[in-house]
Image 1 (tube, rainbow, N blue to C red):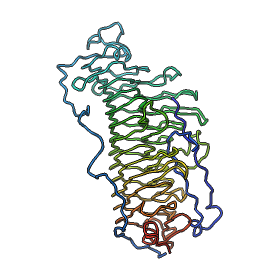
Image 2 (cartoon, rainbow, N blue to C red):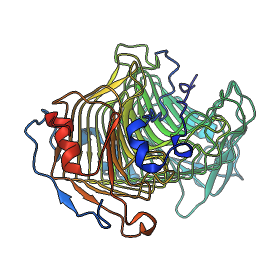
Image 3 (cartoon, rainbow, N blue to C red):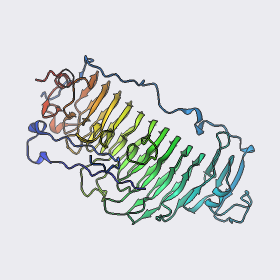
Image 4 (cartoon, rainbow, N blue to C red):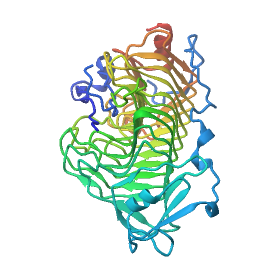
Length: 500
């Protein structure tokens, strides 16, 4: 599996050449490369708070804010199961693989338990450290899923040494109705750039998989070149994959190279990534990807999914050797080539980019993404970024940003602002958001946008009360090579072409 990202942008550091007042007129917009793994060529001392009226041009956004995309009709965490009617296999470090697997005669290895587990089986794992890989090659049913779970209060650790044959601690391919619950994955490292360590890997035409309450940490790649890759949880739809739930996991301290902590890539539909903690990883936190050649089908993009209630903090490439000093570009939450994704009520703090909705591939669009009610703070580059990777590659269509709180981003003073609008934007609605400045003073930074493609309605723009250093300087909005000191002038120029 090849998960090599596209070459990152290069940036002219204008701040070392020009005073801040001239920066906006010559600003270079940076493509906020997240992690789409693509190698295709392809002036008052305290400015007043402003609340803007609706503009006269409003894109047609065919998504409702109360409509999530994930269909829970076959959600495994909604099931009520009766343990008395289920089969049970027990695993313990004191067991034997020649044993029956009963409570009094446990098996020794998780692979033996996986081989024995059929529909309606719960695998109960006693405290201890177990070796991977584990290949799950049996399926359950909706009424009788197969469950792998730690025994009550047991700390179950899965570890191992990745190889070219065994890159994954748990491998699920072409299976269905499987639950992985309450396990810890760690200490799974490689020094080989041909190996991509992954804690939990789902592929083929798998469906109805629930991954919940697991702790994945301190694993990945120690390769120091740009071929390095690793994941925490990876769902790769080489064939159609559907009904995936990744909920309530902790995914932390991963060394990812050019890859992502949690990723859904290729032909994946109907998914939720909810209430996870994704922290301190050295690349992208949560990524939904399309158009990389992952799928052997025509639908090579992840779609119809929800990303709700996650805490995503301090995901950054700054100390990632695969990027060799490139500017910060790791998204906390990133949609690259996905479609119909609902991103709501996430807390996204201290990443390179907070939330990014973009596309990195030639003539390919990210479409119908609804970003609502998120809190995005303290990003190094930009709070929220929207648009194609560059003028030739990628674009977005039918994107809504609504009721988000975006505060104190662009801490690296790279002119990413609170909101960065990049290339090839078709129908973007920015409504009822609150944007609060950082010391950089950049609020919205935009490429030249076609009239009618972007609307701004009822957004609030606030100075940062802690920004004493620049308290006598006005906030900045940028459109192409022109800068503005008021949101009204900026929005009139963007929407109505009334540029003064």
